[in-house]
Length: 257
Image (tube, rainbow, N blue to C red; front, top):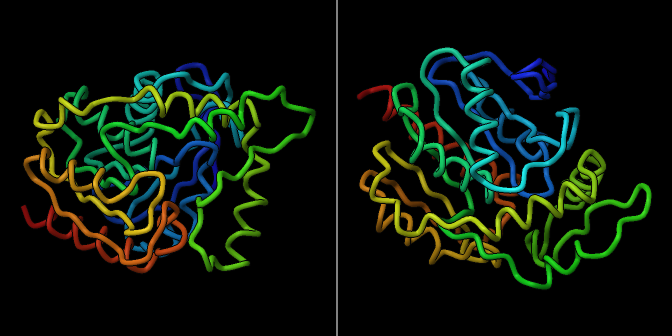
């Protein structure tokens, strides 16, 4: 169910489905919105789960936030306002950066773990992608799809679905997201993360390649790394069965602690 609530004076839109604790709170990538998690949330029907919209898209009031630190503060306001009990963050791409930032700066009392999907501790963005957003947007102009975002033989229905949902993210918001990702850097702070991390990456991810995930695994004390053969950056949509299975197993391990 998609809902809109007032959080710290701002209308925030999110999808919420009731289930078992701990609560999953899912954070989307640059240019995207909560719909990026539709298939994954459907694949985890027993879990209490949110997928939130960052500011400036899909009903969450803007302006878009310019740094990962600002995005983390927005997330913290949402968690304190809407989420009861223990929670696990699921972050894709810049969403993973936000999850890392939260694990480093929160009180960690209710945070039980982080799931890092196709992300890294440093999210350098190719200059070509940044240049795509330097042009002055025309009315109704949609964010461009960077080359190589999807797998080579991506499902046509999935691409059509994603294109429809892109209409909920304005061009200006998408550009701000990518620039925020490019400035994110927590390479030297990962050993301060005290909660378990599930790390998932695809072998064909051109945006956050496997070496990013390997660095996370080498520097976060408690971690579990999975590499999906042939998967690209959008594994959150394209490789749902594998991702959902590993998340469910990760949560079961947390339940048993």
